[in-house]
Image (cartoon, rainbow, N blue to C red):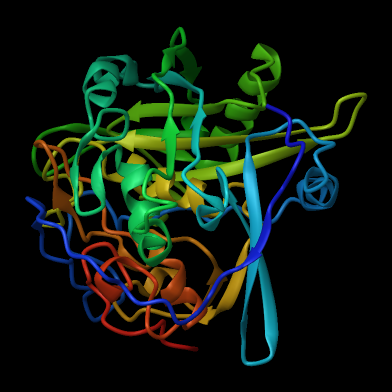
Length: 376
């Protein structure tokens, strides 16, 4: 729906968690970078693509805050650190404004990808598994029985939502409408197929060529900017520059368009992957999709900046200033109903809030980080 009203609330920095829940979540080990900054794995270093800010989208956001741009429902606020104010936008409604539920419709687009050697890797084979996963189905989390993205968001603002007035706060994904498969034929110069140590065929595609095809499909299908299109591949990853830079497991983006009805279309891409492709790193099934869904919740327009941060275990990101909740924790997974979503960093970690307003005073869902983000 079109945003007619956007709530602006400055989050309190000193709220303290007051409750603890029982959870069945199992922590998987975090992967360790080797001396060269890579990771011992089968097909490449697992990472995620950070889409540069889109000037058109950023400009339209100024109008979107007043409700004059057609896009997903969102709220805006800010935090201050070392005298600098950092505004941000997130999906849904302000968690301090009461027990409101937002549901964003989803269009799930499986990718049928054929490479020049004749190999086809079809995301349609993983649609049912994805639909049955905690991305769309309620499961037991620390912050309640709900979907993964909503659970992470509730835990991130736990000191706010764990109150009588806000306890039923939710931001949910609608039951996905499954789109007909999008067929991509990858030129030899834009991708190839390799075999992993587990014997699986794995596709590798140039990210710039790939995203151009995704944007063409969005434009052709005239998907509603009120929905979230999710593009799903199977055992297919992206690289930037050359195949030696594999493997990008996912990204999210926002396309701004001026017109009679100006729009911002958000979308996400993620690879559904078999176990073992990245060695002992516990990345499989919906790990990549969970990473991108949480980041979409927290930075839907790829416009949110934060104080510079760096994590030694994620050298591929260097010194970053983006509110990408999954990037600091690539490879830190846990088990929910047989699936393997990723741990996520909370706003308090990026904003240097002490104590954290997250669940149990944590800085990530699993408590992987015990203090605020290291500066760089």
